[in-house]
Length: 292
View 1 (tube, rainbow, N blue to C red):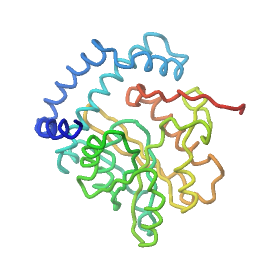
View 2: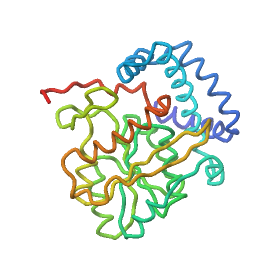
View 3: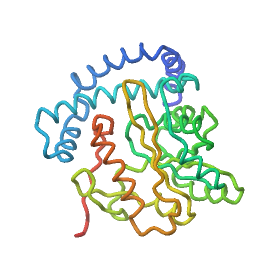
View 4: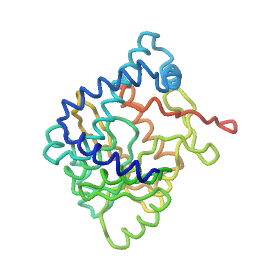
């Protein structure tokens, strides 16, 4: 059934993607009406997350952030759709990036770990980093149940000679690349909600938050520099990527130090532009199982 649906919808998907972005943003406005006004998609989750994250904001401020978030969520959906056919020239018209510090790491003949959150158009960050730096990017992803949807998403992600690797196979791939002396930037989106059992806990957006430790352990084990990728939305459809080198020698860091630095940078971005984070994700569904 999934296969039939995939090959039925695929031509329509690509055809819509060829439309001008201005037309797709009109569709985004209509989508906002459906998702937010009619369906109220995950509205309770978004409200709860916003109230807990910003306890000092008024009801009016929270409601405004929520409306802005749903507007941006719809924009993000059509931007990802457009990414299926968007050319390098079109990216360069709408995206800018600072790559000086990233290229300094590359000049040292070292690979890098790009760490980012579900903030801004994180899906487009990989091709933009490839265009503006000396690295090609290997996007680390968590496999999903529908293999056809996964196939479509990964086809978009690999359009500009980037690669994708499932999360459970990345350490082996990184060791293989290191032995071959291949210089790769490995992109981890690391603000999901992990199992509380093996998580590192910290305060994030005024809440006790479980954080993945896998990226930190890999960085320490292989001593690969860790770079935070800030995806900053300037206006509708226009972005700037600002990298920050967090640690050049992760093997010298203490437990939790890398993830604390990442989450604090992400938190600052969210506070500056709260509508651009994925508030409809149940980020705080787990609670700490023992006292701090």
